[in-house]
Image (cartoon, rainbow, N blue to C red; front, side):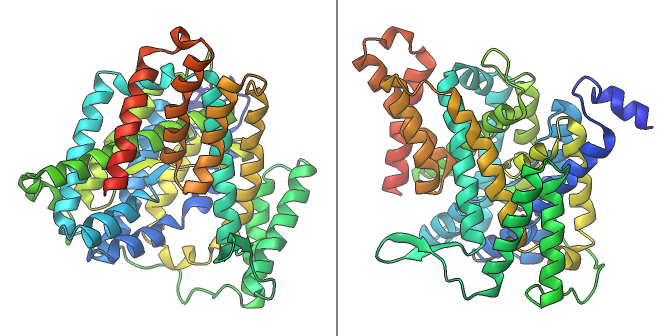
Amino acid sequence: MKEKFSAYFDLDGLNTTVSREILAGFTTFISMAYILFVNPSVLGASGMDKGAVFTATALASALGCLLMGILAKYPIATAPALGINAFFAYSVVIGMKIPWQTALAGVFVASLIFILITIFKLREMIIDAIPADLKYAISGGIGLFIAFLGLSDGGLIVANKSTLVGLGPLNVGTTWLTIFGLVVTAILMVRRVPGGIFIGMVASTILGLATGLIKAPSSIVSAAPSLRPTFLVALRHVGDINTLQLWVVVLTFLLVTFFDTAGTLVGLANQAGFMKDNKMPRVGKALASDSTAMLAGSLLGTSPVGAYVESSAGIAVGGRSGLTAVTTGVLFLFGLFFSPLLAVVTTQVTAPALIIVGVLMAQSLRQIKWDQLEIAIPSFLILIGMPLTYSISDGIALGFIMYPVTMIAKGRGKQVSPIMYGLFFVFIGFMWILNAG
């Protein structure tokens, strides 16, 4: 069996092993297991049944991971995307007063369009058309973004009315748990200890349980909540998508998920060293995997599914094949029945991993031609835009809008591909729609 896994996923060619891939998959899962609890909380604010959303989240995530691993053979995990789920709950349902059933139908329609443009390879053409420097900026920007997430989740960075953000209070026990995990993980990584990120998370969990900062679970196994309240609801409400406002919602679901996923795939592929001649091998299969997961997720009862930046934690541990994603997918299925145990993986446990991975992803920034301002300015806007707007797609939008402008100003307008010019107008419209909403 081990030999079959090795042959199918080309582990020898990728210079990896079954045990390393499984460890990487477990590390990725631990890093993103929080979505099993965060997503039901966010979508629950819209009136959706939290138990059903929990089950839908686990199943949709598992399906996406398995497809990405088996079909595309990438160590990239998928799950309902953060940010777009908040847009679903707070902007569409609560803000626009659209029933959650109709909003879910909007996700379903967007996923159908997603699959259509994937079949015609439009998504693949767009990703291939992005200049290499901007791809490096996307990778580095995602690194800053997830490091900021880690600093925020760990309590090291907090909101500040005077300066927007500031250093968090150091008299909070959970913040020191993050600091402990960060120091331990940093030492292990500097010493090049295999699985250093995962070991750091285990050490933080043990310390948290020993000190009472993490509450011990009351049980280990529990039955999966019923999916009935949300299952196939989207299909029954497709006819509700009959106004301009609702089509704008569908378009927003489509655009945000498209560029969040595209940016994440490019960033992770750069981190893992998969990019060849500025192209991502098997990108069509990767895109087909995540769009299929998005469609399934809408039918199960959750917001759009996309590639997850936390996959970088598994890649940093050494994950290089689809076996990593398959492992993560299987663990999501197990997570359905071990939800009480997953509660010990708090944000303070995963925060150090995100910060360290941010450092690793930022290394791609050295590839950018910083001495050419026509390249440096849009790259910098992508880089700084992601953490400051708290959105991968918004950061991409800022850079992609500026890129044709600076290239034309330099007299290099003919070097800009027609697709990049098209994206210039798409993102202007995208930003206008979001601002109008």
